[in-house]
Length: 234
Image (cartoon, rainbow, N blue to C red; front, top):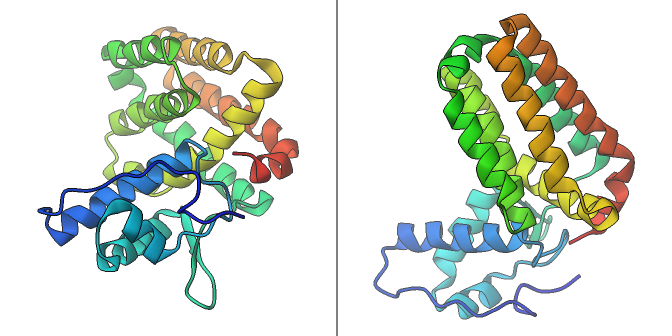
């Protein structure tokens, strides 16, 4: 386990920022480091170290860590110390069940609107094909699904899914990194699968789109046996 102060490039924030802005900027910085794998599961996020590195007081750092706890990226110990969240196989199972409940329904509701605006998904896939890093690919992967959720017209459905996004990005990013080490075709597979989904929206019924997304989410679960490796990977 390493402390936040080790092996991380120093970033100094503008001292003229308002406290709320400093807290938000701290969240963005730490989230980026977690998603990039520069901070590993279980790494200590010591308030003093983070504050010193970013050139700010401990108050916005503390606020940022609480915000990240709500996002599911940080856990606090009984003694009040903050650590990068370790996602367990049970966490994965819960995320999987929720995706399987939300996303196929969203696809069915969104089918007509997506078909009329396929350029959104096509632009996303083109960007994914040109992605130069695993974090970018993971972000674009989830953006693809969020476009479908947004086109469902159901704001509560989108809100529920969005509340999971940070944890989904954390888990999926680790899965993508591990899969890329072993196969080197993560981006190719993602692009191919998403093109199949686009074709389904273009040609098939809402019910068929619902089934397609359900099958896609179910295939995501096939990575569960690798979960222990993912938990330890950066």
